[in-house]
Image 1 (cartoon, rainbow, N blue to C red):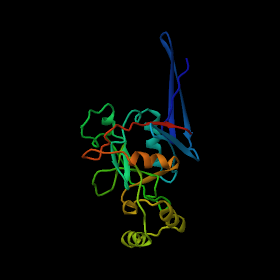
Image 2: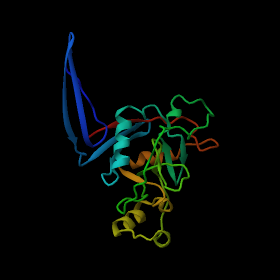
Image 3: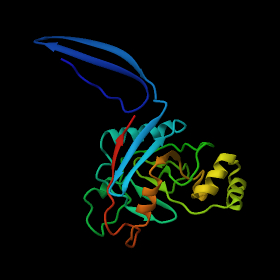
Image 4: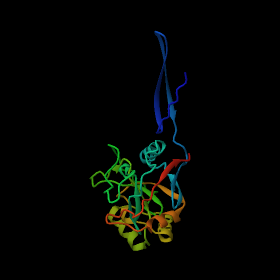
Length: 230
């Protein structure tokens, strides 16, 4: 008899397999090590087009959690339930599946949170994917809710102010990216960025342009399907 076990995160695992025949049984044990892939890609499929997202290996807790949920089909059929043009498009609430018109959304998710993972190499440039969270001192992330940055134009003065208030420095590449594409630097070091849209930035524009109801939910549902590429 053959059994398949699929781990949803990198790390070391103990595997135990028990074979039974009649009243006899034999147990086999082994240890396996799963290495994180060098490049983690996921595809967001929507009615407005597809977005290819590269998840960062600099934020392994968020990367592995997102991959686990995506592999389970957790996000499939959920909505981008909160859309603010010039800011972001938010999804990942399981309660948004088959949500009724006017139903309040944004409170759903698994019963755990994730440690913040702030790294110098990741910023809220247009197309960044980041974890939503409640207001908590540790800035721990939601177990499933996330947003993709739409953003607005960013000035050097805004970046200088952010650096001064949070005691870090943007790289030249980040400053250039903010100048070229815009973003939401006010959220840097407040919410964990864990990836970047590398194809399909125009899809963000299309979703962000949708008319919304009070509470920022689009008038017409914007559903997603998320699949792991590698």
